[in-house]
Length: 368
Image (spheres, rainbow, N blue to C red):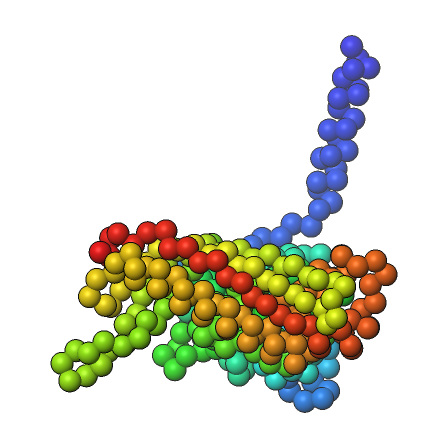
């Protein structure tokens, strides 16, 4: 019995002793970073801005920021620490904003620094800012702090709108793998002081080289990701109202879409067919009556619209020498002895694309 007590007491005593050795950190004595911004200054300097919430006694949240300039992200962190009256902690980092000029000069150092930091989660949102990222992050958005606001903005648009899935892990994975190039959300501060998603930043290696405009985000999303709850407006021509002509439109919502890529490897040139299956509901119709005949017309026009614009985007990516869709990745898995250099230099530039859309309008009765 005595031996049993010793066996139980010994581990308990060790745990208590080890617990006493752990350094205690009180949340009120820390600056917990929720956001970070990086901007290009010149060839030898970048500017980093740390964002952290300051909790007031009346339970409101103020946005605290610190900025520093240095030659590397590591040196920026050291300078920020020297300017902070309390320890800066990155364990709750939600968003990292990168100024467009910085993005065009290359961001792999920033991504690598974040990935190597064990306190930073892989699901942190990276994004490119039109203009100055440090200026945007110092705005005043919502009541729960800027970091939370920007993170929620991105999450909402991924789940319910036309923004494809994206985060630190996905960006770095696409950067290092063969046959796919990375992309990031593009945002800006509006004249009213809000934040808007304005498109998708396209990267070649780690440098931003172009963008997908906001009007094309719907088509980009259905090419690279699944669509769970999107919407799209179809133009059906014009109707006369008195002495003027008004365009007839149908708003298709609750869109669910998925795609499948098929590659004819042995064809010369290689032929790529992307099949897109999409279903939705007509919520608004500006014509007189939405009959079953008009529903069929909506399906046909939407099919043509998707096929035309998706093929246009694919040819644009091909011309730029980038592959955000991951055609090369699919080719790599289907061809033994895949040569990425040969694919990028001579095969991908000549690929023939064909987009086939299958559009189904599931419901329109409420409009009739």
